[in-house]
Image (cartoon, rainbow, N blue to C red; front, side, top):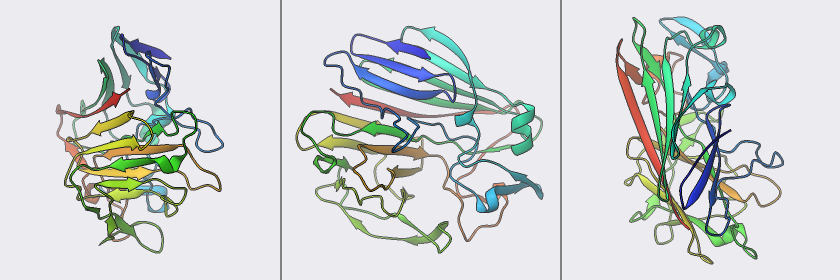
Length: 293
């Protein structure tokens, strides 16, 4: 576990998956990251790379050749090499192995850098192509932030706010639960989506047309707030598992790419939003999380 900290927060990141596991206030001890209770969901904030979501038949093709890969890619389930840059910054590096090559034929260097600046945690996803062929990749966040931060609260005291937005238009799924090209209508209450046990009964809400690239988790009973800015990411999702009990967290998920669509073929090159890096090229996609404590 790697730790970065300043006078306001202590942040822990696991070298396994380069996964954020804790962001705790030094003022009152509030933990803002979901604790990873397996009764609801065992993870905290997995990194999605080199694909986002699941694929038809768990497979895709590159140049006509078929590969099978795990849901959300392999990065979340592999150890990264950690390099402590300072008291407030650390980066993690993942490179190909025989294991990854069986699922994903490309050469790559994938670096995730965390920097704590006051109450803001910056997360940079740096993908480099050291190979001789074009590199196709996808990357995304899946950060679970806790609800019910103070005693006496319930999940229905919480909401996700999209400032200045009157309605959301989630992408609808087809009969096989893959994305379609159709959209639904989800009215908001003063820009806010209220959280209830049934909010995510149809799984994740996925958006490809958000008018803002910012989302905040807030509460009607306290002034604490988690705000994610994701201007580098064109797609976004909200998720929490649907259980027969109240699940006290919501995932904020900036994505570079949409998951697989029922209307698409198997070619990775044809996925909506897939990124392409030419040989020798590098790209950084960044989002930040700022906490009002």
